[in-house]
Length: 176
Image (spheres, rainbow, N blue to C red):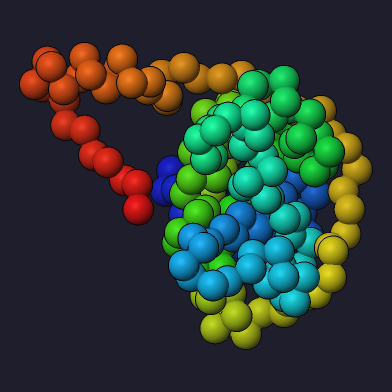
């Protein structure tokens, strides 16, 4: 894979059946968008893609949305999806580029090295005329996954306060 965070639909189509390539449908929508990611996955997804439910993969005990779970919890959930250490992961979403970057960051924060985003996501896949499948998707065998949290990829409120006080760091609030 290249150093770019993206792969093209042509690249993925050529490698779709490679045993080390894992495709994750990371579609997630804001409530105001009126879309249902699970229903859309059921209706059509890239063949062999696994549904990565961002809500279920996040810390379900936190009162804040989409907080990272504990590493051992993430490892268990990734094993259940059949995603293992050393896999080449390609993440896409139903809007083209919305929730896939968040999932890529999440995977990399837990130590996955080879994680790419499908350029243009599901809309680009469909526009290229590539096949889709419906239903639950094919289950994958459990794989060993070891989550190794990169603490440098995460900042807490204290880190942000220190960065703002120092005046040398630019802080971007990406909440919608």
